[in-house]
Image 1: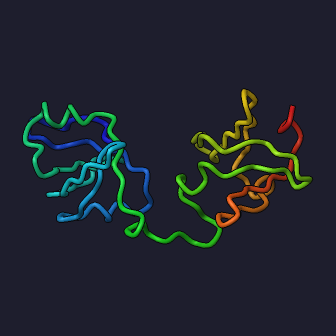
Image 2 (image 1 turned 30 degrees about the horizontal axis):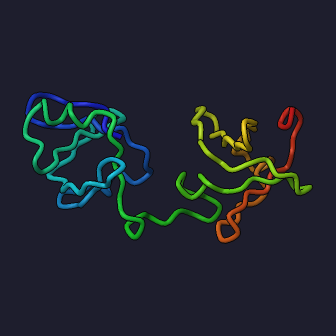
Length: 158
């Protein structure tokens, strides 16, 4: 996610939501926003827990600031594989959540980052259930079946 301009020469501050920041190497094509506009990375460098990035065609502070809060993505074919049992957020969003007893909790519509663990938000109509992303709670994720199986713990369904 682009967090704003950095300096006056078009450099961007980028919040990293990846375990693979080296994917943003010079020459890499990335995609900006919901309409997935392609952009070429010219250069990057670390700035604290963020990345400073120069994109082709972004030449000044105004152009950089115009990209504030724009999401950065890569093509699915370029996504780095994750270890067994780990999933990207876009793989989780849309899954249908059920308890181990078969009770439908709703579709996963959002993921909240809480620091210690993510929390999945399952929505069914106007009802929401918050599901901690813990092995004791999330028993199985079946991407092919589009399901998440959840062990109800105390307080989950109240």
